[in-house]
Length: 307
Picture 1 (cartoon, rainbow, N blue to C red):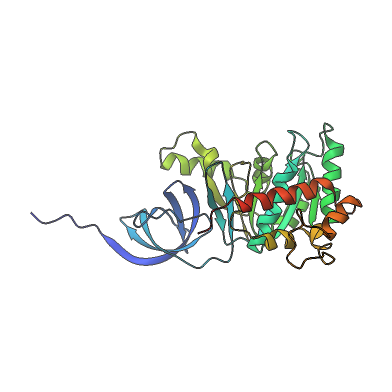
Picture 2 (cartoon, rainbow, N blue to C red):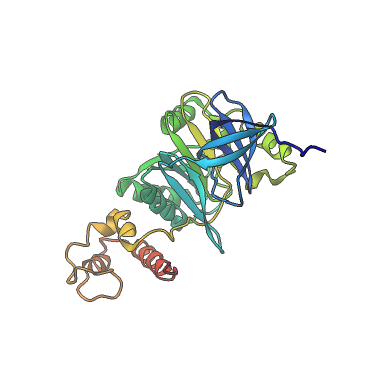
């Protein structure tokens, strides 16, 4: 009896548009979708990747190789740091006054954007909510003072002004949309991509994943202009283990602007005497909360193993 032969077609280039663990969906240059798996046991595929595939049967494919990435964003949970999205040029961070937001989440996201070399944008959503509004607006002003691009809007209103502002943020960009759970990311996504929920559900059903759509990271083409947006599940931390202390300082302009007067050239701005950064904190030129954030990030990097 002849051995069973798997029919393999020529290789083709594709983009990874959704990841569900080791299951992926890729889209070829004509727009056709394939359910795909990475060859071997590698778990290195991420949404946004440009990949080389071999088609197996009609709608399934094997991912043979991953093209060089222009950028890579990491996320982190209690146990490990892992990749989240690739080949983006913008990281759009959403927060709101309710539920209560965590400033450190936004600041860590800004560090991740700087490390990846992508444009950071901060959106304060739910401006129609009065609870916690003063704190949310004060935080936005502090980010604007640091030189970041900031926006304030209410996606729930979905009026012409809101749509125009969202288009100005996302159109002609390859963006990753992030935020803690409950900040209104899904509402923003649905204003940018009308059938976003339907696409996510279709991917999930194709893999028999039931209701696990909230664990899916998915890429969507924008409705009104070139570009795409990658939506990620809400999470609490960004992976910063790949950073060095110099990366952290470079990504914090309020800290970096006061490093020139330290007594020691290798000052880490923690416990060293004659530190101009600590003097700036004492003088109120650097906020205590920002300095405490800096110290916590450096401490977390010090705990990382040396490979």
